[in-house]
Image (cartoon, rainbow, N blue to C red; front, side, top):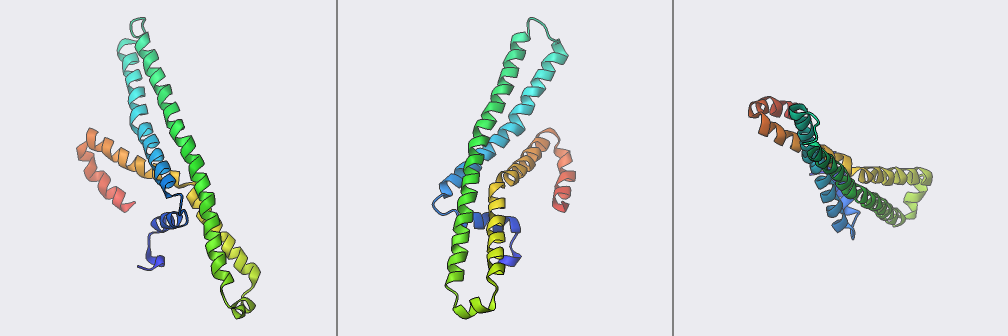
Length: 182
């Protein structure tokens, strides 16, 4: 399949992977860190807050349940710290990899341009070539730097689908066609 007919998202993920040679283990690691962090956000935090609301609405705030509420609030705080302990380092790794991918992509393009015959260079304006090279490298960098947004979107879609499947199987018959249309 030609590059023009590929899904742009898959194409850019592929290019990020291609120009991150030597750093691919870190890519897998920070993608997993993002997935775990967002799964924790999607499943744990809402359940903790739901339990806090349940305790307060059923029993009120009393000396008997204050320890339970403190524990639940502590667990919610721990969950937020846990998410950021994954998300923060993963973002740092992601930005470092984006920088590496941009440099490797630029190096690849420059190598190709420098091997072209002198006649080609006479016919093409060097400023235009440098501008295109920079735009391409920066586009790859901008995508590679923010892959967590795409990963989080997919995790949210799957987690929402799972929650909907658990709470209301009949709603799935409406949601699946709407997802396909979207």
